[in-house]
Length: 431
Image (cartoon, rainbow, N blue to C red; front, side, top):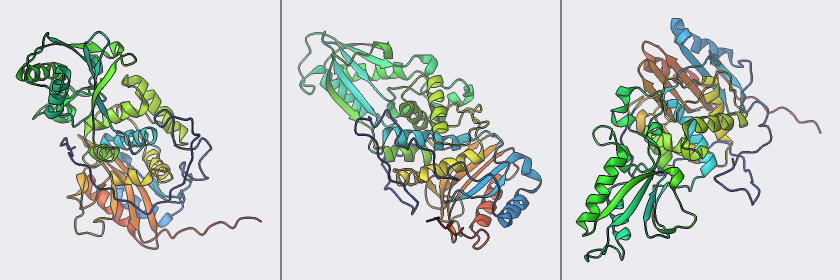
């Protein structure tokens, strides 16, 4: 999984997918409520038909997985919700970074395509300052310098301040910095950096920054001193944040939602995925965020048997999903008002992100976009495949396969074959 930041937002790339226009009451806040309808989804979406409807594709996929069928879960569906092929589709598996498809769907739905993560500088009535954040993965030293200037007053003129500044950094307690199931070795790597609200360069340099608030204290203090001032800087818990009576002096905003989603889905950036789960569910208390995520999935009518959400990135091996759930989630997002925003955040076979080196120059080049997942013993990929007979929603998760990449490629090629699963004619409507 790549831990490299995508510092510029990529241009959206759309697919011709069915989108249903949905409306919310005017008094419902964008962040607090889902933009999906409360009514049940159309028949077959996203629960999928329970019976496989394309025996030809089913036989071919069964042949591809062969003797390794027990370690694979594969689901292929079409835009009408037909279950074209399915191998162990209801068996829960460790998803690795396919977990990010859930986090990004929740964030896009609950926060909207124009949302940005914001870091703010506040002045309290007593003259002290607070800095609050939402986990901007691209927060950097230049932005910290602007906070220092504004806290010193008048844009940071060269004159000495009359008294040391008092600045509070509002942060989560240390026990919330990592999901509990993350391996200790992973926590030392850049891809396993701690998840904090105030995070310079995603709390990673060549490796993870072990104590991000201490680093923030040090760098902010050095910057204020460089500008001719001094400050007493301390950490305070989120419960001490006071914005009701404070004056907002300045805010730094992250890249837009497209850039954040692309970091998570195209580049598989763990930190951003974890932040999106927390902001999307409205809680940085991870157990509560997990509960909210499960409720969101269930509210969409998705097949939930055996599903467990543990973190937002898939680095935790306690996550469990089914290929049936992931295919159904993709179907559900195809109906969403922000469907094109969701697809535009994905990697593209042979062209972009974690899929850029796969199937380049083949019949799959540019025709599959989705999310990969890789941790030791786990290989997963889920996304949208363009075929001569229409789009296919494909999810493949292996826990212990010997040569998963070759199996994945062959399943995608078989799923693209024209005529195997011809489109279903619409059912005549009674007058």
